[in-house]
Length: 280
Image: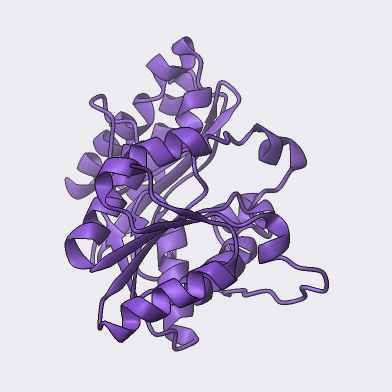
């Protein structure tokens, strides 16, 4: 049976208050819907560690850089609820936009430094919108633990930063990226790839893995990244926004592996923007 869907924070409050009185641990999985196995893996992780699990479904308009991209984002609530039905979710919070951003709303959560490069450079304002809505969702659900995928590595670092900076009383849990059998990172945007583009898409992860292996073997980082970007275009990607080696913690550019590093990428294929990252 699908979990109950709550549209108002006022419906969420008494439910969570009862759980807290019973000393139950509350986990939350924030999503924008269009659920796939990656999301479901987060729900399972929350279910394994928490007494109660809330999934939020809210397509946040403040995270989109164009109204066209917002309009194209898949809206699949019935299918999402069917996927959640067997997973033991206690409640789904799916508020309308006016509940999240009521008249007069004037607050923004902005994280400097971490939000500037890569996604921040190519999607200005995106992380302010994400940080603001996630802060609100944490307040709405009063969760003890929040679960995010590592596929959005930059987002995960930003969430961990503002939770620490604002003394928010919850733990942020980063979970491994879930991939298709051919290596493509699962994403709600993948369903927009036509068959030809879908056949090309796994090249992103493959080329990143090959480049990481070269760097581990001592190849110079700038030349390796330049070659990898060219290989992606040769494979059929329309453009590469970035493909870089960064510090896993600070997201500063790095030229060696003296500290934990991530390779992060964003590229366009068949009118769809794909992102990925791997440890190096």
